[in-house]
Amino acid sequence: MDIWVKTLAARVDEEAIAALAHLADDPTLDHWRGMLLRARDEQAQEFRISVWEAPKLRQIRGALLGGPPASVADLHALVSGKLANLAERIRNGNTDDWQQYWHSDPDDRQGRMVIKPKSEDPCRDALLSDLQFLLEPHKINAQPEGHHAEDNRSDIIAVHGVHAVVVEVKRTHSRELWSAIEKQLIAKYLRDPRTGGYGIYLVLWFGPDHLRRAPPSGTRPESPDELRDRLIRLLPREHRRSVTVLVIDVSAPEGRCAGDAIS
Image 1 (spheres, helix red, strand yellow):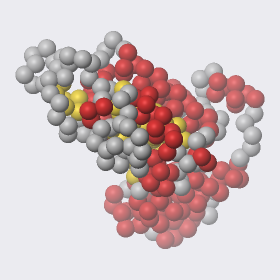
Image 2 (cartoon, rainbow, N blue to C red; image 1 turned 180 degrees about the horizontal axis):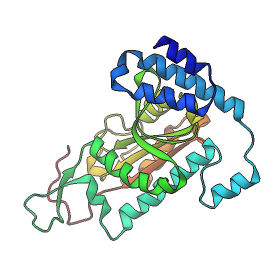
Image 3 (tube, one colour; image 1 turned 30 degrees about the horizontal axis):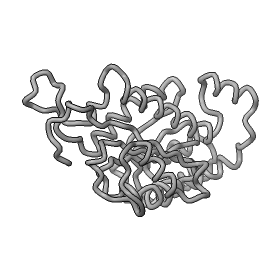
């Protein structure tokens, strides 16, 4: 394995980076995962430095017209925009997409009533399924559990070429709601050189009654907008241009929740 890794590491190109990433994802190679991830990250950083140049006008124009992103900043803006569009559809669309994030009441034959929120992984998967559909035309590969250094795994990673944007997903129930933006997203995932420091912190809002932890200061937020404002204030100043905070309202409309249990 050492020889294969050294051979791939000697090449500075997208194929070598992809091959190292594929090997790191292979469960039969768990013993070498740390070494493979380090080699992949070093290669990605070297490749980005070697090929970087300011986007040409045609690349910028193509990206603005719906083509592939021209840079990691462009990728970040595109993914953030698609998630914002998805948030609008979940809350205000006519298909009740918010209901994907709740367990339905088995006693309700019409399937309109819900009883409690789903756990984090099923919520992440429902969100990712819709996001993949929106990103596919732009040739962006969005997958769950992106692998990073020291075997850290992010909830969602969107990849285009040698660039990647990480999305960390939390529910309002999470005990790490107020700390994960810095201790997980920034400290663990944005170290990945493919991200260029760009990431997204996304919270699924189930309603004020589902907040388990009070904010570090001030009163509990009573709306998605209040929660987003509070989380932005927690961002270190140097990350405020490269980290987007999104709060998606998946709360049950009045009269649609049969119980108040918190999972």
